[in-house]
Image 1 (cartoon, one colour):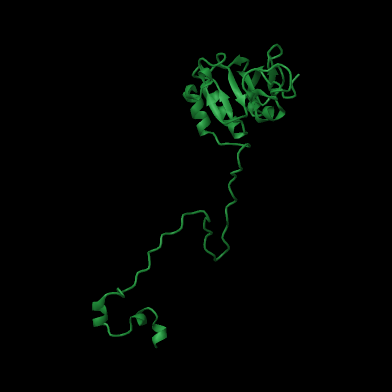
Image 2: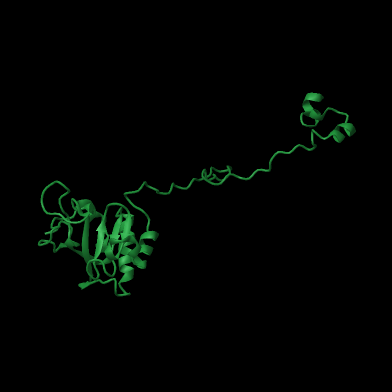
Amino acid sequence: MSQYDYVNYANQGATRNRPLAPELAQALSFLPEMGVTMEVFSGGQPGIGEGGNRVGSTRHDHGQSADVFFYQNGRRLDWANPDDIPIYQDIVRRGRANGLTGFGAGQGYMQPGSMHVGFGAPAVWGEGGRSANAPDWLREAYGSAPSGASQPSSAPRAPQTALPGMPEPQNALAAPQQREPWRPTMNMLDVAAFQTEPQNVLAQFYPQAFR
């Protein structure tokens, strides 16, 4: 029985027959809000050199990734159904916001309607496990999603409030105002100016010193 009631395991006879890492299950905790459950048909496996059966890349090691089906209202979702694409995209966006980094799906990759979800090097992929074959809907959802827990926090700062009678606070990261470069009122190297202006040229710029 799963600790997370939105995760069902159907991987007992698979090589990757171990449960998901708690952090992966937690990163998918938004699924009940969508009315979606998840069936794991390929889960965790031991790491390299730890003994026990394993297959493929290290993404599934210690339950850091899973291959799954999604269900809504008792129906298995399928990315071949255009009506289901927005649901898959929402899962990708919300999973990405919660720190998930790897997603694989599409025609020619695993089973119809299935998806790889988990951690590891940030990437999306499709047929043959190649990023170049990631379906457009998956690439779009991944690219438009905010990065989450695995990335530095980018929470906005609280807005500043000006005190009465004081000017509005300025954004410290705003682009500096453009200033007009300083230019003398006359060219100090202009010989004609010296001939027509007998007074000391410096007096023009430092009048206090010549009073």
